[in-house]
Structures are given as structure tokens and as C-alpha cells.
Length: 544
Image (tube, rainbow, N blue to C red; front, side, top):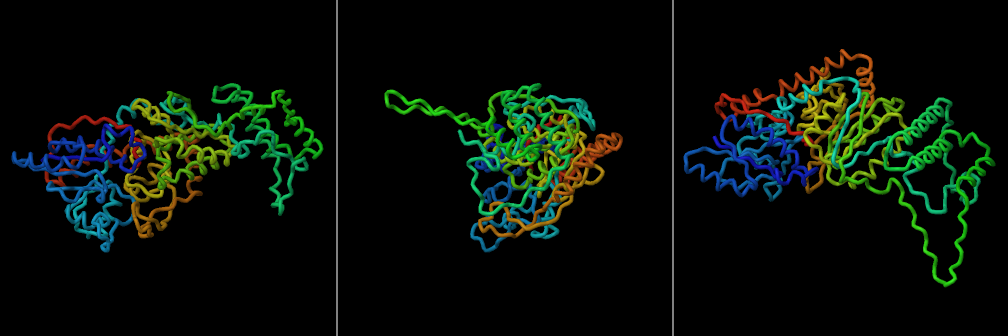
């Protein structure tokens, strides 16, 4: 049997395709290839136009061929002579079906009926297809075989609940919450020569209606805010970052004053402090020549410019480390909940770190949104580290090794390769057990995030109608999972090791080479070869 494989993303375009919907199919093709090679001859084509000429060429020599399209049905050609089977990652509870549409690509049922069978990455997708095509429609559930590829990572980086210290490196940039000087007051750059005024100071304008006063600060909260800014001030002098230490010290002192003690001072003293902090600007002397005096350039707000992404940078993480890998432009990933639940659960915990590896080429698409979110949550004692850029295999191995837990809070998943990869490295998880994750997530391998169903729209649906369902993760359940997992890592290492071993064993049973090969051979009625190809891990930034 000859297997002709095609994905819209290939080896040449992978670096420019970061974040595209088709990006994940490239990794699925790479993972399937060794299994297919054990069953027949594999040919990878760079375009669908190459399929039929190759099919006819092989047919002349008496050889059978099958085209495996690593793409959803609506992006697979329907006019090929070669037999076609779609490899489908789909995360919704029904497939696009609309008999009234003139174009066949809007109706998956007609495309799948032409193919006669399909391969899916999860039983959830298989059930969605059978609801439309009938229970007897041939569908093979075939997860990507990746467990053997992480043997070296498992050996080099055994799972530990509390990381003593790991160095992370990336070509791009690292956004660290502890070096940003975060505050909601810093979201808007101050206007030159117009500092924010205190109550009762010149320049105040009475509001049409007074808002309700904020709740009184307790002594415990004032002590926590003071401790936070003392710690931030020490870090400003002890660690190197993009801002000058004096700037950060003044910034943290001002924030401490505003948030912890300003309301305790008399109005007269606050006015005096304001005058000392923001003296009036002296008028510029007139120009004898009569020409205008150039206005001094105003320094750009420190959080308004994007970090440099051309250098190789590194940082060290330690303690209980939570990791997640996703595309921030993918609405399914629910990354705002990942951050807010973590910062709220670990608000007073210094040795808890959330590392987010972004699979998105354009930093500008999410940078301001990210900084705004972190600023709104500040102050918090825990740490959020965002890695933007491309990770080499060795650098990705360090990320696998640094993790205490992998975190997923998605609304729906077609497979979730990063989650499976970290489990294959023996890492327990925090994740829902819906859609594709239902195949391999339960309480033995991690902490379950509760969820409920909600209506949504099929991707690429031109009518934008609510015709399918996805899942809504419960924020409170996610927060509790953070708290419970941290408590396990800190106080019950035996239970942590049992969960880590269960995660690794689940992946061995679910996505190792032998069971995947056996399912594929039975589906196509082929005999596997005696030798097993060597599997190498593809460092996973795929999202499907």
C-alpha cells in the first residue's frame, strides 16, 4: 500500500505558519508517518495537485494508493481520482451539515459520503460524525503516537513536585510579571506636566455623581501590600531588567503610598507631598530670534513599546511551576481564565509560577491585552512568565522538565497535543475532561476542571448561527484545582508521584506506537512490518 500524505503546512512553511488553524495538522502528519511507514510506502506531497499524477504512476505498476488529507473535509479536494481519507481534528458535538447550501464544502456529510470512511483524533469527533452519518459509518479513532518520542525527556527530567530551579531559554522575549512594575495606575501614561491630582488639589473637577467609596483597607491587606512592594523594590536592585533600578524603586514607592497609606494621611499633608512629588514646570525663556523653542521629547511610557524579539533570552523558574502552551488568538483556549484563576488562587504565594508558551508569531496581537490583564490583577505575590518566540527541541525539553503541572482550561479540544506531550513526560495535569480530553483525562492523572455546555458557532460558518455546542469551564473549579495541586506538591509528594506515574502510564496505553499501529492495520486490513521505526519527539507547539 502507498500512502500519499498532504498537509497545508509543511517543513518549508512551518516557521511562518505559527498560529494558523492548519498548523496543528503538520504535527499530526509528522507523528503518523512512522506508523504508516511500518504498513507501506509513504509519499509526502507539497500540494494536492500532485496527488493524482502520483496515483496514476503507481497504478501503472500495479500498486494500490490512498491519499490521507491532514485537513478538515471542507479543505480537502473532492475531484480526485485517488481514494481519499480525511484525518480530522474536530472539537464540537456536531459536524457542519446544511443541505440547502449550493457549495458541497459547506456540508461535511456529502464530502464524507464520497470518501466512504474517515480517521479522527478522538472518540468525541467520531461520535459527532456518526450522529450525522450513521452508527455504521467507518470511523477510525487514532490518536497521534508520541509516547516513545519522550523517553529521553522522561529520563533526563524526572517529575518533581517542587522544582529546585530550572533555566528556560528562548529566541524571542520573556515577559516576567516581577520585572514589569505592574499597577492599574500604570495602564495609562501620565500627561506631561499634568500629574494626577490628589483630592482637594488644584485641577480637581467635581464629578457629576460621586461613586460609592471603596471598602476600608484592613491592617492585614495594608501589611500584604507593604510586603509586596518591599519585595518588588528589592528585586529592582537585585535583578537585571529592561528598566533602570531607580525608576522601579520610585515606581514601587509611589504605588505603595497610593495603595497602602495615602488614605491615612491628613489632606493638608497629602497636598504637601503632592507638591514635593510634582513641582510646577518652569516656563521656558523666550527665544531672542523669535523662533519657537522646540518642545522636549516625552519619554515613551515603559509599557507602551513592544519588547525586542530578536535576541536569545533566558530566565530561571523554581518552586511549583504550572505550564501551558497555546495560541492566544485561539478563542477556544480561554487563557484569561488560566491567568486570573492562577493569580487569585496564588495571590499570597511567592513560590508558585505560571509559565505560558505562546504559539503566535505576532507579539502585538496580545501584548497590550496581556499587560492590561496582569496590571488589573496586581499586586500578587505569585509569578507569571510568558515566553514568546521559537523553542528549539533542547529548549522545549527544559520546559517539559521545569513543569510541576500542565494546565488546560479550554472550551473544546480536537486532541490537545501539548497536554498529551507533558503527560508523556510524566507530568500531572489540571484540565477539563470534555471533548477529546475525555479519552485520557480523569482524576487519576490530574485535577478535573468542571464545565458545562453552551451554544456556539461552527468555525467558517458563513451564516454565523448557533448550531453546535462547546463547553464552558468553571472558573471557581479552576481556581480550586490550582490550590489543591499546589497543596499536593508542597505537602504530599507521594501522592504527586503516583499521579505523575499514572499520567505517564495513561499515555503509554493511549498513544504509544504499538496500539496505534494495530488499530491502523486493522482499519486498512494490512500487515505491519516486523521492525519498528525509531520515534523522535517533535517539540509540540501544536494546539489540536
